[in-house]
Each structure stands twice: as C-alpha cells, then as structure tokens.
Image 1 (tube, rainbow, N blue to C red):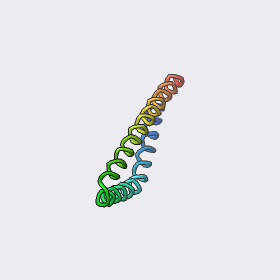
Image 2: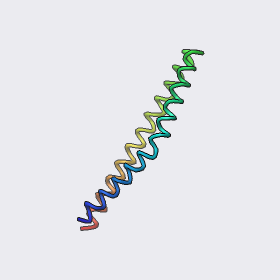
Image 3: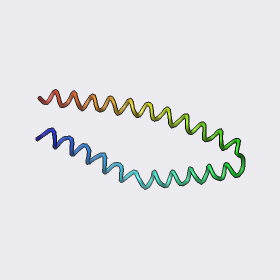
Length: 84
C-alpha cells in the first residue's frame, strides 16, 4: 500500500506541473509560430536556417531529457527495492 500511495502522489505532482505549465507552453508556441511565419515572409532562406537550428536543438534536448527520465526510473526502482 505505501508503494501505491507513493506512486500516485508522484504522478499527481507531475499532472499538476503539466497543467500549470500548459498555458505558458501554448503561448510560447504561438509566439514561435508567428515569428517563424514572419521570418518566412521576410526570407525563406533565413527561416529554413532557423528551423534547422531549432530542430537540432530540440533533438539534443530530447536526448538529454530521455536519459534523465531513464535515470529517474532507475532511481525509483532502486528506492522500491530498498523499501522491501
């Protein structure tokens, strides 16, 4: 029972953080799309360079984030084993 309660409270915290961050994320996304649209209107070449840069940065961040989540899962599993 303590393990289930621990998992539920940790997951609830993540859901709360998601819904708190969602409005800021949507607003930032709208600004980025608007800026990219305007940049494309001014120069398609510069817009493509910006998009490629954003794509490379996003892939780098995604890789590091995945590794961090993997390490968090391993830490949670070790914590569960230690509780036994």
